[in-house]
Amino acid sequence: DIVMTQSPDSLAVSLGERATINCKSSQSVLYSSNNKNCLAWYQQKPGQPPKLLIYWASTRESGVPDRFSGSGSGTDFTLTISSLQAEDVAVYYCQQYYRTLTFGGGTKVEIK
Amino acid sequence: QVQLQESGPGLVKPSGTLSLTCAVSGGSLSSDYWWSWIRQPPGRGLEWIAEIHHGGSTNYNSSLKSRVTISVDKSKNQFSLNLTSVTAADTAVYYCARNAPPVWGKGTTVTVSS
Image 1 (tube, each protein chain N blue to C red):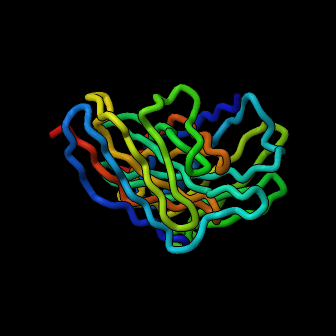
Image 2 (image 1 turned 90 degrees about the vertical axis):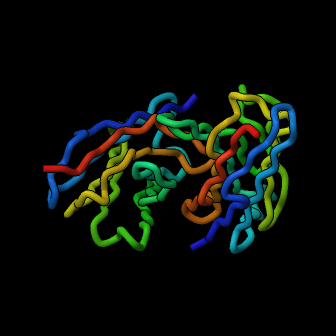
């Protein structure tokens, strides 16, 4: 199984400041057929299902604000919120879909 | 665009069988995708349960494999999950999803209780 390790577990950031979440996979999730990384990021607020933010490591889902961006390749990935807004308070998960599905443990983002 | 909708009983008795269905609309289950079930126990993270391809190939989470069956009904454009011998630890929100690119249903809550 591919193990996904997220860091940090929680993060407190001032409004308007940058938030950075890291995700590391135990093996490469680069799909050779399309040269894309099989990595997605989700945002989950209490009582709601996970909302897809980013897929193929850096493709923003339609309707997602451009303050959210994804980067990385191979085994190391980052989700960046460029200017944290109050509505961004949530738990964020990374997920690989290279081989079955596995998820990171989640990162809780709060306002400092 | 593709939409997924889970359905099934919200309450299952201990030692019983949990059965859920995922209806796929706006697209064909017979397209070249893998389709999964995922669950999230209260206050915890996300756990992948199983996946199926329209051709019938399946993969299961090793921790649940002995109790899980995933199946597909192409005529109804839906796929299903059966989880046997349930306990309180199986209480969770259950989601169905297309693997890649990801599309998820809104989830259905299943409680295991007598």
